Each structure stands twice: as structure tokens, then as C-alpha cells.
Length: 217
Length: 217
Image (cartoon, rainbow over all chains, first blue to last red; front, top):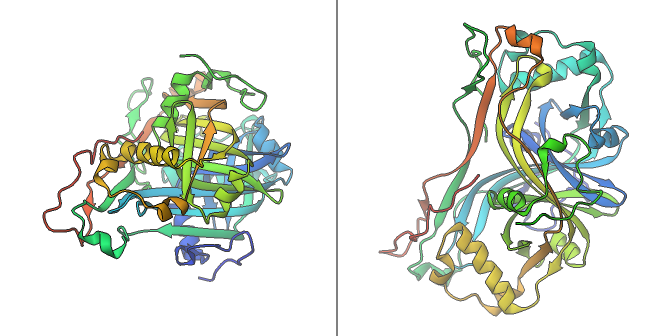
């Protein structure tokens, strides 16, 4: 796969060894997560809002209530920065200074577009839902016109993007390796737990086949 | 505990039932996490950078290399928005529209201050490290003057802040409860795994007592 174009905003200024712009790495970081943080500017002030997102090809999507001020602002082509991060571990070194964290992150810059076409909106909601629980969309009653009106789906090209990844153990000063100080990595993982059924399930209702197929991280 | 003051930026515009500004809730959301997302504006464009943070009383802290452009910009009193989010579960409803997510988030607005006093910096690094592994700081060799110079610690008052929390099962349209569609919550948790020792540990080195005491979430 080819790489996304680098720009002054996405070129890493330090630690170039940790950066990448190729599609495989970018898509890998995006596809490992559910929640992103969207940054945008209101009256000159930065705002960072967490929201669920998904990817379809070279585009990312997020959605919510049409009454959301954030989505209304972003529908109008406001500049956003969408960041996805996974904290993979704490890196304990032999000195305080070399303690670090293992992580994978992707930072996307651009402007969002609000989906207007009903079929396009439904298709994206289906992709989103089936990502979480494969086959889920087909099990649900059709979405109503009113529900679609109350839902805003935003789309953004993955174009100006950078990833940053740190993995592996501590890197200490050579003279510190002799110290009797424990060093290593404490891994951190996100885990999908056992589904908890709602109290008011209709009799005979069974869990969807796709439940539990989604893997985080 | 008393509550933080509400401002136009931190007052929830919708779903007031999900918002809170009291110290207990704010501190609870902050203390459950390790990584925050800091938003700031550069040349008019929003940037969102993930970084580790910690809390000490009514202040939050984050740190990094003194060569970091983000930290240099923020040292000069740039407005920031620091957001901490925990995704607790996927809420599967009987209709696509009522699918939701359980989460806890805190959004802090303000300006950061760079710590200048050596003892203050060391004290905060100790608080940070001992939060991850109690007693760790005392086990490490003293930090050098050069290391301190290469480290920037930023401090921000927790003042203008809001939290938003959704918990519990799906809330469906009354007529949908009869549908034979599975509904419930798929919990998501962050987990600290078993520590992996570095290959070059000095002979006889044992893991720190505090390892594994930190709880995420």
C-alpha cells in the first residue's frame, strides 16, 4: 500500500524513528480503536471531545445527535484534528528519566463533511454497527425517517495524517544497567467483557451470533 | 467536597442529567486514567496530542521532553483543553438509533504553567511515578541536573471543568421492547497485565513491591 502525503503538520519534528505515514500503519492504528478525540476551535479556544469513530477505505466517520453543537460546527467545514491513541504499556527503566510508555497513535487533520444522502448515511451506520457486532444491522428494524433526521454522520478524508508508535523495553544509560533496579514493561490492554443482557429482553431472545467477535487493540 | 464553578464552556447544553461539576466526580474520572488528550491551537489549527497526566489536589500535570514543541508552546500560557475519557461499554439497543456507549469523561479548560523550581519538579515526578508503582521513586538513583533540564513539567489548575457520564443499559422506544432483538451492554475494561522483565536485569534484581498495585478504570 502507498503512503499518505507528508505536510508540515504531519512531519514528525523529533524521534522520526517513531513516525510513519504508510496506509497499512495508519489503518492499523485506526482499526484497533473505537473512541477518538476530536479537536476543534470555538471562539479561538481549543475543544477536545471524545466520540466513537469508524473507517471506510480512505475515510473516517463519526456521528451523533443532529442537536450536537460540536457536530453542527463541524458540519460547516470547521478544521478538526482527529486523534486515535492506544496506550499499550508502561516502560519502567533503571532511572526516572528513561521511564516511558508504549503507545500507538494517529493524528488526522482536515475538514469534515456532513453526509446528506439517506442511502449513504444508512450504509455508514451499517458499517459502523457491523464492525462492533457483525450482522447486527440486518437484525434490527429499519431506521425511520425521523431517526435519520435526528442523526448526523460526518465524513473526513484520511489525507493529512501521521502515526507515532513506541514499542519494546526500556532504553537505559549504559552505566545504569549495572544497577539492581527492576526494569521492564507493564502491558496495558483493552478488553471486551462478557455481554450483560438487558432486563427486559423479549422471551426467547438469543444473543447475536456476531457478539464478542470484535477485538480491541 | 464542593463543586467547580460552571462557565459557558463547561455548562452542558444537552443531556444535563449526564453532567457533573463536583470535585468528587471530577477527581474520580481523572484518577481512573493514565492518558489524556490535550488540545491546543497552532496557527489557527486545532491539534490533539495524547500524553500521560496525573493529578495533585486541584491541579493536573503532564510532562515530556523540553524539546517538545507542544510543551514549549503550552509553557507560554497557550489555552488548552485537556480531556480524559474512559469507554466503559457498548450499549446495544433494540433499534440502531438507540445504540449508545457507556463512558466517563472530563474536559478541563485553562492555561498551563511550566514548573521552574527544581524541588517542585522533582516532587511532581515522584508523585507521578509513585502513582504508577508505589515506592518506585525511592528505588531509583537521584535524577541529574541535566535530566531535569531536559524535562518539562506543566501544571494546570482544575477550575473550568465538566464531566459527562453515561452508565447502564439501553433505553428503547416502548414499542420496540416486544421485538425479539437482543439488547444489553458489552463491557470494556482496561487491564494491567503481567510485568515483563527487561533482558538485561542485573543479577538478583527483584520486581518492586508496588508493581501491580495500580488499578486502571
